[in-house]
Image (cartoon, rainbow, N blue to C red; front, side, top):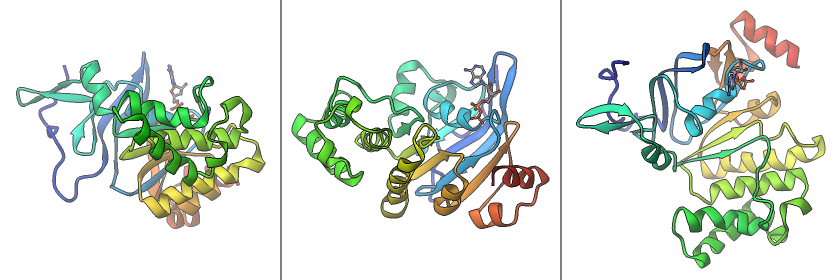
Length: 267
Ligand code: ADP
Protein backbone atom coordinates (compact mmCIF):
# COMPACT_ATOMS: atom_id res chain seq x y z
CA UNK A 1 0.00 0.00 0.00
CA UNK A 2 1.13 3.49 -0.84
CA UNK A 3 2.29 5.59 2.12
CA UNK A 4 -0.05 8.56 2.13
CA UNK A 5 1.21 10.15 5.33
CA UNK A 6 3.21 12.79 3.44
CA UNK A 7 0.00 14.20 1.90
CA UNK A 8 -1.99 16.79 3.85
CA UNK A 9 -5.56 15.94 4.87
CA UNK A 10 -6.74 19.28 3.50
CA UNK A 11 -5.24 22.24 1.68
CA UNK A 12 -5.76 25.41 3.65
CA UNK A 13 -4.68 29.00 3.67
CA UNK A 14 -4.83 31.87 1.20
CA UNK A 15 -2.39 30.22 -1.19
CA UNK A 16 -4.26 26.92 -1.44
CA UNK A 17 -5.00 26.11 -5.10
CA UNK A 18 -8.52 25.30 -6.28
CA UNK A 19 -7.23 22.10 -7.89
CA UNK A 20 -4.08 20.19 -7.01
CA UNK A 21 -2.76 17.02 -8.64
CA UNK A 22 -0.22 15.90 -6.07
CA UNK A 23 2.27 13.32 -7.42
CA UNK A 24 -0.45 11.44 -9.27
CA UNK A 25 0.06 8.20 -11.16
CA UNK A 26 -2.63 6.89 -13.50
CA UNK A 27 -2.29 3.53 -15.20
CA UNK A 28 -4.52 1.54 -17.50
CA UNK A 29 -3.33 -2.01 -16.83
CA UNK A 30 0.38 -1.93 -17.64
CA UNK A 31 0.18 1.35 -19.51
CA UNK A 32 1.41 4.24 -17.38
CA UNK A 33 -0.36 7.34 -18.70
CA UNK A 34 0.59 9.82 -15.97
CA UNK A 35 3.47 9.36 -13.58
CA UNK A 36 4.27 11.54 -10.60
CA UNK A 37 2.09 14.20 -12.15
CA UNK A 38 1.82 17.55 -10.36
CA UNK A 39 -0.29 20.53 -11.36
CA UNK A 40 -1.96 23.33 -9.40
CA UNK A 41 -4.78 25.44 -10.75
CA UNK A 42 -5.46 28.60 -8.76
CA UNK A 43 -8.92 29.91 -8.02
CA UNK A 44 -10.20 31.83 -11.05
CA UNK A 45 -7.37 30.61 -13.24
CA UNK A 46 -7.87 29.33 -16.80
CA UNK A 47 -5.34 26.61 -17.61
CA UNK A 48 -5.21 25.05 -21.05
CA UNK A 49 -3.65 21.71 -21.89
CA UNK A 50 -2.25 21.19 -25.38
CA UNK A 51 -0.08 18.48 -26.89
CA UNK A 52 0.05 15.56 -29.30
CA UNK A 53 -2.65 12.92 -29.42
CA UNK A 54 -2.16 10.23 -26.78
CA UNK A 55 -0.01 12.41 -24.51
CA UNK A 56 -2.46 12.12 -21.60
CA UNK A 57 -4.35 15.41 -21.86
CA UNK A 58 -7.83 13.98 -21.56
CA UNK A 59 -6.73 11.62 -18.81
CA UNK A 60 -6.00 14.66 -16.63
CA UNK A 61 -9.66 15.65 -16.89
CA UNK A 62 -10.97 12.10 -16.58
CA UNK A 63 -9.22 11.45 -13.26
CA UNK A 64 -10.88 14.54 -11.82
CA UNK A 65 -14.33 13.51 -12.87
CA UNK A 66 -14.61 9.91 -13.93
CA UNK A 67 -11.77 7.64 -12.95
CA UNK A 68 -9.62 6.57 -10.06
CA UNK A 69 -5.88 7.06 -9.74
CA UNK A 70 -3.27 4.57 -8.53
CA UNK A 71 -0.92 6.88 -6.64
CA UNK A 72 -0.88 10.40 -5.27
CA UNK A 73 -3.79 12.57 -4.18
CA UNK A 74 -6.08 15.00 -6.00
CA UNK A 75 -7.57 17.94 -4.11
CA UNK A 76 -10.41 20.22 -5.15
CA UNK A 77 -11.37 23.31 -3.16
CA UNK A 78 -9.22 22.20 -0.25
CA UNK A 79 -10.60 18.67 0.13
CA UNK A 80 -9.15 15.45 -1.24
CA UNK A 81 -11.36 13.95 -3.93
CA UNK A 82 -9.38 10.79 -4.67
CA UNK A 83 -9.17 9.94 -0.99
CA UNK A 84 -11.10 10.58 2.18
CA UNK A 85 -10.11 11.09 5.77
CA UNK A 86 -10.54 8.28 8.23
CA UNK A 87 -9.20 8.54 11.78
CA UNK A 88 -6.81 11.31 10.80
CA UNK A 89 -5.42 9.45 7.77
CA UNK A 90 -6.13 9.46 4.06
CA UNK A 91 -7.68 6.27 2.70
CA UNK A 92 -9.02 5.58 -0.82
CA UNK A 93 -12.38 7.30 -1.33
CA UNK A 94 -15.57 5.25 -1.16
CA UNK A 95 -17.94 5.50 -4.13
CA UNK A 96 -20.31 7.59 -2.04
CA UNK A 97 -17.61 10.00 -0.92
CA UNK A 98 -16.32 10.25 -4.48
CA UNK A 99 -19.73 11.28 -5.83
CA UNK A 100 -20.06 14.03 -3.22
CA UNK A 101 -16.49 15.18 -3.60
CA UNK A 102 -16.92 15.59 -7.35
CA UNK A 103 -20.01 17.78 -7.03
CA UNK A 104 -18.01 21.05 -7.29
CA UNK A 105 -16.73 19.97 -10.71
CA UNK A 106 -18.59 20.50 -13.99
CA UNK A 107 -17.55 18.97 -17.26
CA UNK A 108 -18.28 19.49 -20.95
CA UNK A 109 -17.18 16.89 -23.46
CA UNK A 110 -16.48 16.80 -27.14
CA UNK A 111 -19.87 15.14 -27.62
CA UNK A 112 -22.55 17.06 -25.88
CA UNK A 113 -24.48 14.18 -24.30
CA UNK A 114 -27.67 16.16 -23.70
CA UNK A 115 -30.67 14.10 -22.61
CA UNK A 116 -32.37 13.60 -26.00
CA UNK A 117 -35.93 13.29 -24.64
CA UNK A 118 -35.73 16.60 -22.76
CA UNK A 119 -35.93 20.16 -24.02
CA UNK A 120 -33.01 22.55 -23.59
CA UNK A 121 -34.44 24.01 -20.40
CA UNK A 122 -35.38 20.61 -18.98
CA UNK A 123 -31.79 19.52 -19.58
CA UNK A 124 -30.62 22.45 -17.47
CA UNK A 125 -33.18 21.86 -14.69
CA UNK A 126 -32.71 18.14 -14.21
CA UNK A 127 -29.49 18.19 -12.16
CA UNK A 128 -30.44 21.12 -9.91
CA UNK A 129 -33.81 19.50 -9.09
CA UNK A 130 -32.64 15.89 -8.76
CA UNK A 131 -29.21 16.34 -7.25
CA UNK A 132 -29.22 19.74 -5.55
CA UNK A 133 -32.84 19.53 -4.45
CA UNK A 134 -33.89 22.91 -5.86
CA UNK A 135 -37.61 23.62 -6.36
CA UNK A 136 -38.71 23.47 -10.01
CA UNK A 137 -39.34 27.21 -9.90
CA UNK A 138 -35.84 28.02 -8.64
CA UNK A 139 -34.29 25.57 -11.09
CA UNK A 140 -36.26 27.13 -13.95
CA UNK A 141 -35.08 30.64 -13.04
CA UNK A 142 -31.48 29.52 -12.84
CA UNK A 143 -31.76 27.63 -16.14
CA UNK A 144 -33.29 30.64 -17.89
CA UNK A 145 -30.52 32.91 -16.67
CA UNK A 146 -27.89 30.51 -17.97
CA UNK A 147 -29.61 29.89 -21.30
CA UNK A 148 -29.74 33.66 -21.70
CA UNK A 149 -26.03 33.86 -20.92
CA UNK A 150 -25.15 31.29 -23.60
CA UNK A 151 -27.54 32.92 -26.09
CA UNK A 152 -30.00 30.03 -26.18
CA UNK A 153 -33.05 31.42 -24.38
CA UNK A 154 -35.08 31.56 -27.59
CA UNK A 155 -34.56 27.85 -28.12
CA UNK A 156 -35.26 26.79 -24.55
CA UNK A 157 -38.21 24.57 -25.47
CA UNK A 158 -36.50 22.76 -28.32
CA UNK A 159 -35.25 19.20 -28.08
CA UNK A 160 -31.54 18.60 -28.83
CA UNK A 161 -32.28 16.91 -32.17
CA UNK A 162 -33.65 20.25 -33.43
CA UNK A 163 -30.50 22.17 -32.47
CA UNK A 164 -27.21 22.55 -34.34
CA UNK A 165 -24.01 21.14 -32.84
CA UNK A 166 -22.92 24.57 -31.67
CA UNK A 167 -26.30 25.20 -30.08
CA UNK A 168 -26.28 21.83 -28.34
CA UNK A 169 -22.82 22.53 -27.01
CA UNK A 170 -23.96 25.87 -25.62
CA UNK A 171 -26.87 24.17 -23.87
CA UNK A 172 -24.44 21.57 -22.51
CA UNK A 173 -22.32 24.37 -21.04
CA UNK A 174 -25.42 25.97 -19.48
CA UNK A 175 -26.42 22.58 -18.07
CA UNK A 176 -23.03 22.11 -16.44
CA UNK A 177 -23.10 25.65 -15.02
CA UNK A 178 -26.57 25.10 -13.58
CA UNK A 179 -24.92 22.87 -10.98
CA UNK A 180 -22.91 25.90 -9.80
CA UNK A 181 -19.53 24.21 -10.19
CA UNK A 182 -16.42 25.72 -8.67
CA UNK A 183 -14.31 24.19 -11.41
CA UNK A 184 -15.23 23.66 -15.05
CA UNK A 185 -13.54 21.15 -17.32
CA UNK A 186 -13.71 21.44 -21.09
CA UNK A 187 -12.57 18.50 -23.18
CA UNK A 188 -12.13 19.45 -26.83
CA UNK A 189 -15.56 21.02 -26.83
CA UNK A 190 -15.16 22.36 -30.35
CA UNK A 191 -13.63 19.28 -32.00
CA UNK A 192 -16.91 17.76 -33.16
CA UNK A 193 -18.31 21.04 -34.46
CA UNK A 194 -18.55 22.45 -37.97
CA UNK A 195 -16.01 25.25 -38.42
CA UNK A 196 -18.67 27.92 -38.81
CA UNK A 197 -20.19 27.31 -35.36
CA UNK A 198 -16.97 26.97 -33.37
CA UNK A 199 -16.94 30.71 -32.71
CA UNK A 200 -20.27 30.74 -30.92
CA UNK A 201 -19.00 28.15 -28.42
CA UNK A 202 -15.60 29.73 -27.86
CA UNK A 203 -17.41 33.03 -27.29
CA UNK A 204 -19.31 31.52 -24.37
CA UNK A 205 -16.13 30.16 -22.83
CA UNK A 206 -14.47 33.53 -23.32
CA UNK A 207 -17.35 35.12 -21.41
CA UNK A 208 -16.88 32.68 -18.54
CA UNK A 209 -13.23 33.64 -18.37
CA UNK A 210 -13.68 37.39 -18.52
CA UNK A 211 -16.94 37.94 -16.67
CA UNK A 212 -17.17 35.06 -14.24
CA UNK A 213 -13.56 34.19 -13.37
CA UNK A 214 -14.49 30.56 -12.98
CA UNK A 215 -11.61 28.14 -12.39
CA UNK A 216 -11.20 26.18 -15.60
CA UNK A 217 -9.12 23.42 -17.06
CA UNK A 218 -9.44 22.96 -20.80
CA UNK A 219 -8.04 20.55 -23.37
CA UNK A 220 -8.04 21.99 -26.86
CA UNK A 221 -6.53 21.68 -30.32
CA UNK A 222 -7.30 25.29 -31.11
CA UNK A 223 -4.05 27.07 -30.46
CA UNK A 224 -5.36 30.53 -31.30
CA UNK A 225 -8.19 30.16 -28.83
CA UNK A 226 -5.86 28.81 -26.14
CA UNK A 227 -3.48 31.70 -26.72
CA UNK A 228 -6.31 34.14 -26.50
CA UNK A 229 -8.01 33.18 -23.26
CA UNK A 230 -5.62 31.15 -21.09
CA UNK A 231 -3.77 32.42 -18.07
CA UNK A 232 -1.42 29.49 -18.46
CA UNK A 233 -0.80 26.89 -21.16
CA UNK A 234 0.66 23.46 -20.42
CA UNK A 235 2.27 21.52 -23.24
CA UNK A 236 1.92 17.80 -22.65
CA UNK A 237 4.28 15.21 -24.00
CA UNK A 238 4.36 11.54 -22.98
CA UNK A 239 2.20 12.03 -19.89
CA UNK A 240 4.26 14.90 -18.52
CA UNK A 241 4.14 18.64 -18.68
CA UNK A 242 7.05 19.25 -20.99
CA UNK A 243 6.74 23.01 -20.76
CA UNK A 244 4.30 25.54 -19.36
CA UNK A 245 3.92 29.28 -19.22
CA UNK A 246 1.76 32.21 -20.15
CA UNK A 247 0.47 32.11 -23.73
CA UNK A 248 3.08 34.73 -24.64
CA UNK A 249 5.87 32.58 -23.23
CA UNK A 250 4.69 29.25 -24.59
CA UNK A 251 3.53 30.31 -28.03
CA UNK A 252 5.86 33.28 -28.47
CA UNK A 253 9.08 31.86 -27.12
CA UNK A 254 8.94 28.09 -26.51
CA UNK A 255 12.11 26.83 -24.84
CA UNK A 256 11.97 23.09 -25.42
CA UNK A 257 12.59 21.45 -28.74
CA UNK A 258 9.48 19.26 -28.49
CA UNK A 259 7.30 22.27 -27.85
CA UNK A 260 8.82 24.05 -30.83
CA UNK A 261 8.29 21.01 -33.06
CA UNK A 262 4.68 20.56 -31.96
CA UNK A 263 3.82 24.21 -32.42
CA UNK A 264 5.36 24.44 -35.86
CA UNK A 265 3.54 21.26 -36.92
CA UNK A 266 0.09 22.52 -35.86
CA UNK A 267 0.45 26.00 -37.25
P1 ADP B 1 -4.82 12.67 -25.28
O1 ADP B 1 -6.04 13.28 -24.64
O2 ADP B 1 -3.59 13.48 -25.09
O3 ADP B 1 -5.02 12.31 -26.73
P2 ADP B 1 -5.43 10.43 -23.55
O4 ADP B 1 -5.36 11.01 -22.20
O5 ADP B 1 -6.79 10.24 -24.14
O6 ADP B 1 -4.52 11.29 -24.54
O7 ADP B 1 -4.71 9.02 -23.57
C1 ADP B 1 -3.41 8.80 -23.08
C2 ADP B 1 -3.03 7.36 -23.23
O8 ADP B 1 -3.89 6.54 -22.45
C3 ADP B 1 -3.18 6.84 -24.67
O9 ADP B 1 -2.09 5.98 -24.91
C4 ADP B 1 -4.47 6.10 -24.66
O10 ADP B 1 -4.48 5.06 -25.61
C5 ADP B 1 -4.52 5.55 -23.24
N1 ADP B 1 -5.89 5.35 -22.74
C6 ADP B 1 -6.81 6.32 -22.57
N2 ADP B 1 -7.95 5.81 -22.06
C7 ADP B 1 -7.74 4.49 -21.89
C8 ADP B 1 -8.55 3.40 -21.40
N3 ADP B 1 -9.79 3.58 -20.95
N4 ADP B 1 -7.97 2.18 -21.39
C9 ADP B 1 -6.73 1.98 -21.83
N5 ADP B 1 -5.92 2.95 -22.29
C10 ADP B 1 -6.42 4.20 -22.33
